[in-house]
Image (cartoon, rainbow, N blue to C red; front, side, top):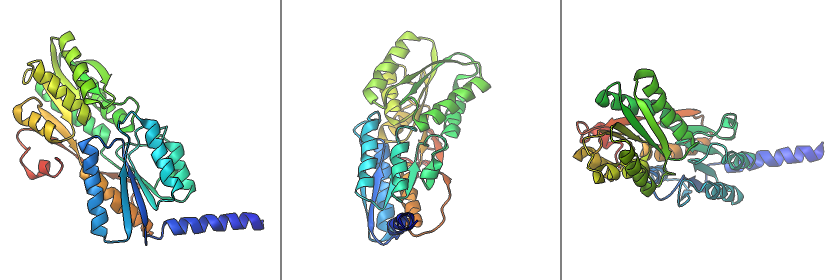
Amino acid sequence: MRRLATVLMASALAFAGASAASAGEIAVIVKTVNSTFWQNVQKGAEAAIGGAKGEHTMTFQGPAAESAIADEVNMVENAVNRKVAAILLAPSDPDALVPAVKKAWEARIPVVIIDSQLSAGSDKYYQSFLATDNRKAGELAAKALIEKVGQTGKIAVMSYVAGAGSEIGRVGGFTDYIKANSKLEIVGPYYSQSQMATALNQTTDVLAANSDLKGIFGANEPTAIGMGRAIKQAGKAGKVVAIGFDGNQDLQEFVKDGTLTATVVQGSYQMGEKGIQTLLSILGKQKVDKTVDTGVVVVTKDNIDKPEAKNVLY
């Protein structure tokens, strides 16, 4: 009994030390560093750390590619091993990251998840989840496409990493809305592994094989960029209704020149900013919401220069 009491006391002290909010590293670990979307998350996180004027420091890292799931798992495990104060994580796989997040929980290191959900039953291992309502975002993309192509014909879905939490909700929301509200035939989905060049090649092949294609959806930043470039190279800009996702400079230009009819943009900066603010609240022993919707905006040529779009574009 004495040994058990000692172990429990040690655990309690470890958690108290990790939650003291006086100092320590907050590790921000994202799906990949090679994307302006995640770099915008970094900007938001850095702004929150700077605005807090506390003694916490922040590190930012991620794999070279979203498909390098094992690398991201190692980054989380290394953060736990070096006893960081807290972790802000965008998991690239809903199942593979759970054991690493559980290790953080066992080490009394608070974790906030952003962008993509972990698998069902793992919510006890993290304190809050901040993300776009991806299902709703997919539905908005589908609605925007139906408004332009009508109820019949053929459309294609260019997706990214099969099984990623955001992909399941986003592409699932898109395809379910299409099936429930139109008679459109869906070609795909095709998976780019979030590689722009792969998406470009896949889209080129889809356009060549489907001369009657009326619409196409690119479900994340690198995929939508590759899709847009393929559409322009094929001379299909303005002829095929294209809906993108996310809002970097390339995608903004595609909206302006008519290559994309619209792009659905997440609050990436807000994910980083609110994610860090949530962790600081947790470290300060304040209550936080378990789920926070960071919102989306459908950006078109009509609203791209208005405040509602400028607040999310990057």
